[in-house]
Image 1 (cartoon, rainbow, N blue to C red):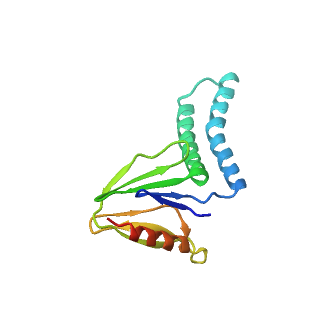
Image 2: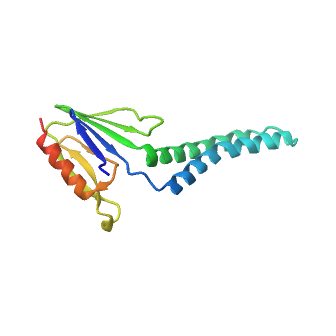
Image 3: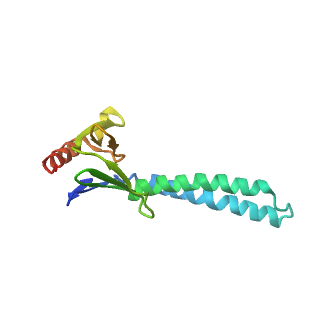
Length: 160
């Protein structure tokens, strides 16, 4: 599976989906972090214990953990990075499928493209780095090193 697409100076990098069982467990875990604390509070109130301030703290903490778990689950299912390469700047955006991060603009003139090994050495995976003297952008999407080298050749050919 090719994890990149480069057209009209827009680079899309797609995350390789994690195994179905892992994604299912992650989504169920995220769902339970949201639902079980609320159900616990409802059960506690109906059993006559009353409403306590600690319930709101617990719901808040578990909701934050649930949101983070949902975000990781969505990234491992629908994750995609969009990098728009313009003449003197690069616009980066992470897409989680159900929502997107804010666009980040970085001023880069005469960008240099290279890869950095990511993960275990035997996995032969790397991430894309776009750098200049002013700043640097490092991708999060891991790709096989062979695909990354192909992508770097394409990006080098299409420099401004």
